[in-house]
Amino acid sequence: MKKILLIPAIASVVFFTGCNLTGSKQDKTADENTATETLDGESEPGDTSALVSVQPLPDNSIAERIISKFNQGPAVNNSDYSDALDYAELYLMLSSDPIALIHGTPDDAERKAAFDSLASLQNKYPYNEQLMEILSQGAELKKTEGGLVPMNEDNRARLDALNGAYDNLAK
Image (cartoon, rainbow, N blue to C red):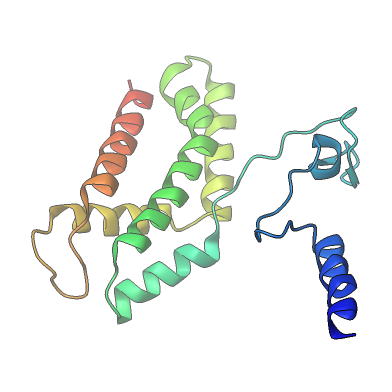
């Protein structure tokens, strides 16, 4: 009797969770997995007609956590460096157009609009400068010092690429 009840129980778990017996998720079609955002901001599953690309944004709560760890401890580690680099890279994506206009346009009106856009961005995501300072200090370390762990090579390479991207924008 127990074996007879066990089979429907397993079948219902498999059915309701969408898992096969190996524990991995079953592949779904694109329509079942796709949730798109329409122009009016509502999400509709499987609708691909009015797609709006959603750009990832820097997360201020993660930046605040890293800055707090830097100021008060515990140690800032390579995972924190990676999160700070994510924030800085997203910030660079958002600020690259205004920075390029500031350095590249002779039109005063466009330059003023770019400065205003950059100021608005800095108000919305105010932690980029502090995170860049923490990252540069971490990149200079050879051993753990004052709550900072030395940056690993992967994060150091990302920081170098980020600094290079900022340098290219200023040209």
